[in-house]
Amino acid sequence: MADADRPTAASPARPVRSTARPPLDDETIGDTVSTTPGTSRRSLLALALAAPALATLAGCGSAGPGKAAGGKGASMWFLTGAPAEQIRTNAITAFNEAHPDDALSYLSFQNDAYKTKIRTAIGAGQAPTIIPSWGGGGLRDYVQNGQVEDLTGFFTDNAALKDKLFASAFAAATVDGKVYAMPCETVSPIVLYYNKDLFEKVGAQPPTTWSELTALVPRFTAAGVAAFALAGQSRWTNMMWLEYLYDRIGGPELFTSIADGKAGAWSQPASIDALTKVQDLVKADAFINGFASVTADSNADQALLFTGKAAMLLHGSWAYGSMKTDGGDFVTGGHLGFTTFPTVEGGAGAAANTVGNPSGYYAMSSKATDAAKTAAKAFFAEGLVTDATTKAWIAAGSVPIVTGSDSEFAASDDAEWLQFVYDLASKAPAFQQSWDQALVPKQADALLENIEKLFGLTITPQQFADAMDATIAG
Image (cartoon, rainbow, N blue to C red):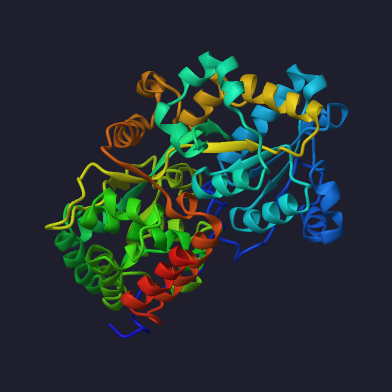
């Protein structure tokens, strides 16, 4: 079809909320600061963007009902997006009410603005006491620069808390044998979502192999629908395609060689094959027309799926909750389907392997006062992972990283979804952490820049590989 006739990424008919997934991308700012009712988002945004105000940022923001301003000066930043934002806010409020002497103040930020702000604040020595982190390379960078607190002793003193959490969640929180972040919240593998109504319309089944996936593209195009929604402007959404293709083609060992800094690792044949397959999809018009201007912060990619403009969406498990909130009866009416990423014929990766976020993480600033650290540890021990938060995450359609939480699924309307995610994460032979989290920030930044060029067809697969190999050599 001509460009004018292909499905486009037009703005959805009604606004959608921000997702909870924390990408490492800083393109879109918008309303980046959120507080409790009665405080102007725009006024706080101006404060957050003003460099001279960094000294106040770490301790300002709305304290909510707990009146954190009367505590020990402990502060927390977290990310916006329904339903996660409300769960986080409720957890802080409940803790503040129960611990007025250790109460926290807080600020919340949109995903794509957080990266810039936290780097600036940390660099200026004005980070909040509790810092959202995604473990991996970013956390290692913090550790090497002495910016976050060693929490190994905390977990020794709180062994029961550690045993309560998924053991697999601690790998990305560990640097050189020491734990530097608190695993919490949910496990978030990347899932292939699909619109059941559109599949029924063309008489198709969800793809289980790469050849089946590519064969679906012309069928949906002929039906006037894009095969895939994609928020290309955010770039980390594009990365999900590479993460799975690298695994399915080269096995987990392929990216491990990259993360370990093996010279020329990005130029291995399996890597070039994966990069080529992505560009083949772009050239086949598999993605929504105009995908490069679609943002994940607005949930526009999800809206394309539930409004019937795209048949499939590769996205994190956190998208289920926001689609349930924003998509009318799309989820509750049984119109949403979900499955694992297809295998690639002849590839080395197991069909059960997954990629994504093994957990959410919060680190603690090493620059905070002793009193603030004490308050933060109290929140980690008693306020971050509670029966109330576990039930709230499940009610929101997410799987908490709490051992045995699957016993709560049967009573949920989302039981099928929750069990799917629980099994996908817990039974995966390999669970690859998202690349922009696993790599150190310098490499992650270069990765996102080159992914944008790869999907924009302005560089070849080999040029992408050469550029990324240079980050290893450097």
